[in-house]
Length: 434
Image (tube, rainbow, N blue to C red; front, side, top):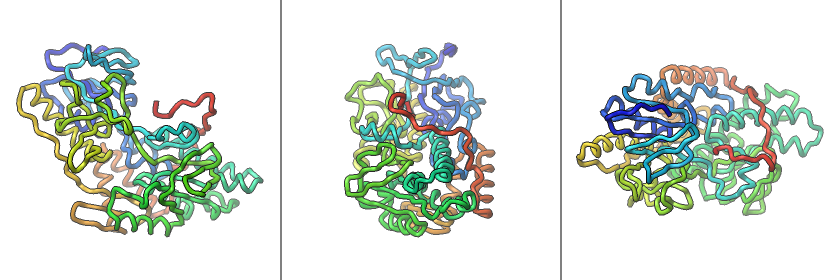
């Protein structure tokens, strides 16, 4: 990988997501050599992927070059690489561009879509964890309407205009709201010769409420907002299969749909090489102690979605969200320096700053530790928090101007089919996130 030797300890970080970037920033200009590896050369602001998928934002406005983040850091190196395996015995990372030895290794690979072992659903549905996947969804949505104009088969037309979203968490709720707003204000003008009123948006949730990680009040208000926008919500229903045309469920419900978007779960993006006892089977997260040190290893750490730190309050690990990742990354930087200097480390204590979700124009729900509110004010809070969290002034400015324009004109000008999307055949199927 052409990383020069150094007298400083080498810390290798795998992953440039929220956790990896937070760690890298805190290690800036310390007496260590830092190498950051990622399969993309950009950091993705994942909470706004749904806006890319529905034409509200362009992909470049929620992505930021990793090299620009670290370009002024001393003794810091970035390599574009797909890590294949970790050789813990020889303390080296094996990647597609070569091998790299480490003194300390930090795994911050995040999460990927969890299909719970259903290969048919994985093959035929759409995921939304990366920018390429969001662009695929955007293309497919628009292609469906173009195709609906051409077909004389009423059943095929209805199938093309029926969107099924599986999973009622923040991603599913926000995506359903965005699609509903497109149906209301944008698609009728784009397709005046198509009866867009026939478009259906079905949100399927396996539990008895949407946004089940938020308060009951926030969940009910979000449901009211969605139903007011025309979204059909199906609770206590689990999708059992999708063959590309028909969605079957655990109940008697059957949906004929050309587009199923799967947001029903995530699991850790594990790299081969760790002992089996270090992993949690069902969700594939890595077991760590209160210092984010991987069980069974002295020199390997895990942070963010991939880390499963068991506590009394979080017996299955912290929420797989941005805030735990940011906080773990920042603290681990201090603890690594302390470990190198043989000083006492500080255990991780998660500071819950709340949760929020937007359902559409002037509609959002916010749960803070001591406050719960919804509506217009919650919507402005949601916008401010997300703008503030974006990396880079230009990205903040572009997103803000897009939101202002979209609000005034009630429009989404990013509805472009830049690269047509073709569904995979069974012979050539390769998971999107490999």
